Image (cartoon, rainbow, N blue to C red; front, side, top):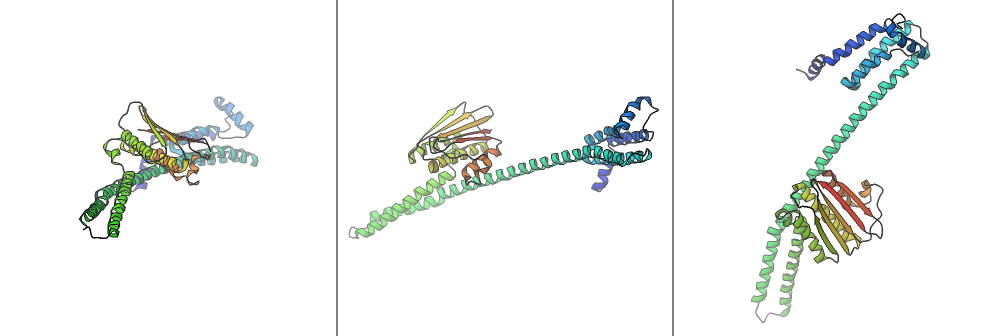
Amino acid sequence: MRPSKQRTLQALNNPHLWYLVSMMVALTLIYLNWPWLNIDILYPLAVMEVKYRIVGILFMIPFAYAVVFFRWRGALAAWVIYMIVILVRLSQVHFTIEAYLLNMIFWLLPLALVVFVTFEIKWRKNMIQRETERRHYSSQILNAQEMERRRISRELHDDAIQKLLAVCNRAQIMLSDLPKQVVSATVKDVSWIKDTIFGVTVDLRRLSINLRPSVLDNMGLVPALIWMVDRINTENNIMANIYVNGTERQVSSEAKITIFRIVQEALNNIIKHSEATKTDVTLTFWPKSVMIEIQDDGTGFLMPRKLDRFTSENKLGLAGMRERINLLDGSLTINSKPGEGTSLRIRVKC
């Protein structure tokens, strides 16, 4: 069966359609005897319609019914039928052109309002659907990035670093096997090769860890954050502290990665841009959420009026944090002023 025919049959089987048709037919028959000066129960309404030159107030009932059950299409159909009946009625009682215009305006306003509200609701639904699709797409991208980080990290650790270490060990063996009569320059060259390769392995290991630290997968969120803060204390001139409040509990894999990346990005920003000497990271576990507070004593910066302007102002790290937080329906609060440091408060549901 064709979809159009199927929709027609569904409409004909809808009892509300026949209720609406019955009301329209009944009101059409009633208005054939307008202005009901001989019907006591309708006499007050007839007087009011004659006084204000508005005909068809009772048609508001099926109009509202059509809006509720058939949305703007039903309201439009009821309005067209009503207009035919009322225009015929107005011509029979010889109303003026002004009366025609007044009736048209009186009934165009509710129709326009219904159409506007209906399309506004539809537009909002489309926007919500697009936002949901965008979040899903962003989530898939971030997950793909994490998988790629993990893959590259493992390949660096298991392949490239191991081969470089083998070369470094071979250079060390060559040094020990060189005869004493070999000139010192050769010894220096081989030593330089060994030291350079060893330095490259250290850099690659650091890169591998930054891409995807194994402690995050093996031990969980809190140990990974403690490890990150300890590295900052060791490798940078910043005194970093971490505090954990509440009862530590397991969080979802997505929330764990999101929190870790947010803290990592925030601490990287502090190291690169803030000129801070101290930073505190506070992790608080709530029954249905986790709150992260990061505060430093650095130079701070001038906050934009809207967080949406982070991207346009090249604050891509903060924009990335905001995007990750939005995917978990979390919240981000940033307080910063030039010369007064910066504090971030993030709350994510998990």
